[in-house]
Length: 395
Image (cartoon, helix red, strand yellow):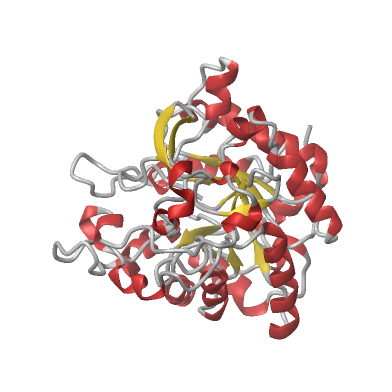
């Protein structure tokens, strides 16, 4: 998953669902009395005596989602990062952001450009692969997964993407290779057996319009693998997400998995909208009418945290919007992104000092966001999220 943070310049966003699946997720956001989760008392009661349930209803609320694994502690989108997220208590692991290889395999990388997340620059044999492409309207220079075969990508190793913020993570540079989506699906089964509890994953289709134009459509490849592994049903432990609504609509026709539309800054346009000439922005999608439309083919939304609580010009949190209430009113769950412990990623009023890699008052930030009634949150630090949830539920 991505965000619109300044240090992630390449993140961009971009159009008949089943009532049964909507109802399933709707139940996940409704307490026993029918009230929307978010009130501490409701959450407490839910956590304390939850009967055995299937699908999303089996997950704790607020749900703690390991963003690209445990990327606060390990290079993102590696089996090491995914494994640690589970060890730290994540309810779901975002494994992974899916991009294709030249020979049509799906691999897990934050972006198709891999210069910042692998050691490809150190491989002289791939020096001539460096190029400049226009990715969702933005000129990007580097090495791209679609120019490599899977066998070639397997010779690379992952590195820390933001070493200035996470210098300790560079200790693990070069340790893990790039996982394929099929390897993740097998890993999920292995971990489920070893841990004696169902492991959930939350993959994302990355830049699907861009890849479809290259003849590397993502959705069909995702659906084929999910079907092969018996994970394409409404109660399957795989939630699918995308910043492009049309990708989710396409997936809705191919699989029965829970589906989530990711939403970036209010003024942005999903890239598939740009390509199709649809003038709407994210601000239009989060109106009541827009949310009703999304509820026709998806079960949830993944908004940037700023759509839940905007910031003022100084970066301080202001008053929550009505997004949580409006989404819940049409049966959509909300899994906003992304909570991180380091100062630069926190609202200004929760920072401590000025060091870019120092932790701020992240527990205070969690408490403020949880109080809005969100159903879960993506976090780079699952252990911090779990503790914050305990504070909130028992507070």
